[in-house]
Image (tube, rainbow, N blue to C red; front, side, top):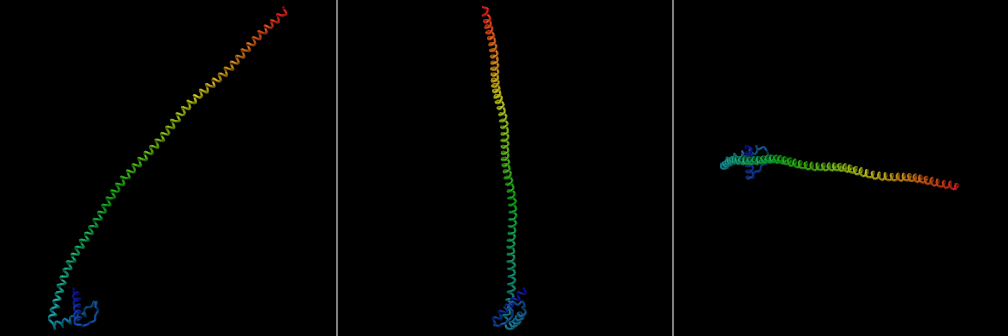
Length: 225
């Protein structure tokens, strides 16, 4: 506060000197205000002695500056409080919104994960059941086909063996009968021929003997006559 008053006093000195066309050289941004204040004090005394009104004006300016500073401080405090409240509300709203967004995102992520897990489990169970049913049906069909083929082959082999045995027996019987008939006929023919030859020989011998006897008798009878 004191520094501000000193700066304003220096400003007034500069303005007065410029108005009176009095030129003085000092640094414009000098932190040392003592020379300016010394000039101001000298001028203040000179003005107070020569012009009482200017002294009153200075007091009025000083009082006005004090009132202005006080009012400025009040306004600044009020504005600062308003800005602080506004900024605090904004920060609070921003933080609340951030927290709400964060909590909402967490809840949404949690719910989304739960729904995703539930849906994934359902889809996995459904797909697993489908795959299991499909695999089971395939295995069942494959096993059924294998069993059917095996049973069919067994039945076919059994039936084929039966048919083969039956056909073989039939063929064997037929062949045996044929062979038996053929052998029987051969034997019969052979026996018949043998019998016929024997009978023929016997008959021939008998006839020959008879003829021989008859001839002999005839011969024997001729000399006797």
